[in-house]
Image (cartoon, rainbow, N blue to C red; front, top):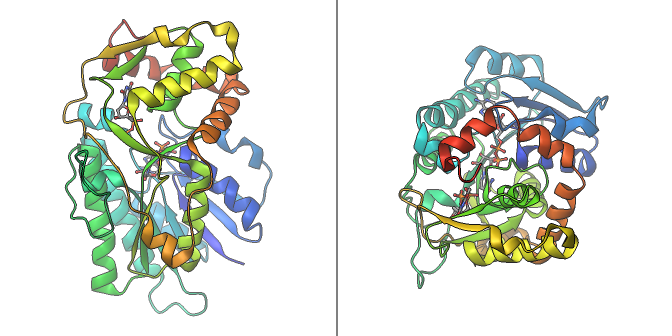
Length: 353
Ligand code: NAD
Ligand code: TYD
């Protein structure tokens, strides 16, 4: 019987992970601490209503008293820390909240767990911090993929705030022998992803017959991983990873953005021929400032040590993602209303909204 604190479990990856954990480890109790920002959606957890093994606790990871009280009230022995501000474009508009949540919030959690776990008997505690490939910076066309030894070179305020958090986590292992683990993952996609990120944004724009904006020439390359593969790796690292270590997680599926968007639109047209020729919606817009050119990750370490590799290929994952969005129009409708409209206006201007 374990009690695990999941932070950010009402967001995209966190909610997928909470569902995965309830299926895979039904004997564990999940305390889900989430501030329910614009990106956190209790609807993502609706299927768990009435489940005594899942306790949704609205609140801020940077709230010291709240976090300390969670540790004193519950025998938490594991932390899986997803909560963060996550969108690069928003970090360019307003970096402050990224520093507060990603750096200060991570520090607050580390401190609460460190004090709570001092001299603890019984089950070995573990603190798994979820990070990103973006901390490593940007690759050129011929560069080998990032490894766990690649020096950090974050380029956006988002990436810098995640790097700051990673360094704090690392320092707690070396200084206090605090049982940390870090995963750095590539671009995720799948159900429940907020439609400001490329793949769900393209889907929601295409469903409304609106322009699909491509930054620059669409030649930037990302490595894509289906969220379920990520969740499987997170649980594996939580249980079997070596404390103090970092594990890179990727999909081994690099694609230039334009190619990815064309593939996604083709699959959508196959499922919904009534939508017409969606390729016509592709619109080139000014590039993101400081836009990283390419991310790619070596996953040799986790493959060799823990036997993990991604199982869902890109086309299969995109089909599953499309099916989910097509069968949840009301989810998309509710998410796209309200303040999100203002964000789109600010980011893309009237032409795209
Ligand atoms: P998301 O933006 O969908 O969700 C973030 C969640 O954190 C939301 O539920 C939000 O309400 C919550 N949150 C924000 N500030 C909070 C605070 N101060 N206190 C408590 N909760 C707060 O993000 P995501 O895409 O699910 O990413 C989850 C984690 O995975 C992040 O740490 C991110 O850096 C990392 N990551 C994401 C990707 C990706 O492609 N999405 C890739 C690699 C790593
Ligand atoms: P995004 O989903 O924001 O993830 P990240 O910036 O963390 O990799 O963007 C993925 C890629 O798609 C990135 O190279 C930027 C690009 N992009 C567009 O071309 N148009 C868009 O409207 C968005 C949101 C992203």
